[in-house]
Image 1: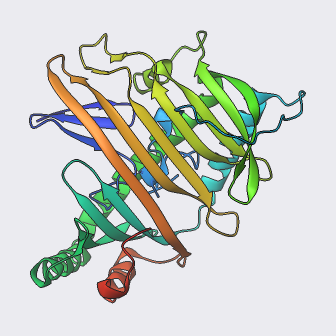
Image 2: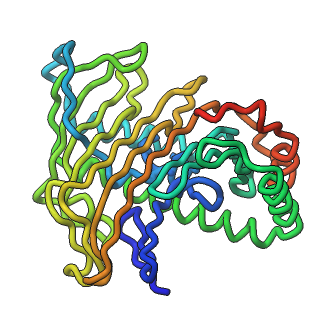
Length: 329
């Protein structure tokens, strides 16, 4: 089976299964991916509810009634650069969390509890298609966790994959200030605070340093940045042009795709990815069409000890009573 990666999208050619690497869904969520990639500038499954999504940042213009004008002296590009740096600094000092992730795509609607540990993320499926698991399915999930506890090599493989995703997100985030031209559009309410609203378009003078960075050449949209903490809170983007990879031989993301990513301060200045909605279509290896349509919502964040190991997290997950767990993040 061949695997072709377009930015944060990986398309596996055969059954044409596409995977958004951030929060990982096998780890548990998608490579957002807590929805870790992006925002945060998208942050960690992190590495996916963590980026993942970072590459698709942008906007579908939003009509807002109340807007004010920021200081004329405010440098939009410098503001984005600071926001990206704040995200990268926070990622280096990230405190692990436990959270709830709901992922919906064309075939599945799942809810998982995820616990981040020093050994990588661990997850337990608690609901599918809006219903709690059957007794047999729940037993199979608990047996899977028991088996994982007996095979640390599987968890280590997962941890390394998550780290690769996180490294890719960090790389792409670092390119954002130069990949686009930014314009200050005003300020808008965002939660209990105010956010700067900036529009962005591809920078014609930006030369992508690698294949993945090509995705920036076809996206435009808006980005919101919290005024008080200078953290990115929203990226609402759309593809204004087809994006080819390897001259279109490896693949193409079609014009018209959209990506919406939202990040929230969940307490204590801990910014986590709380929403991601991606809709893209394209082709892999010239002939195989693919569509990636996924919605992820994360919430109910709570801290866990930084020294927590994956086996301890498994025991915590096994004690969870799914009937007492909300299905909506």
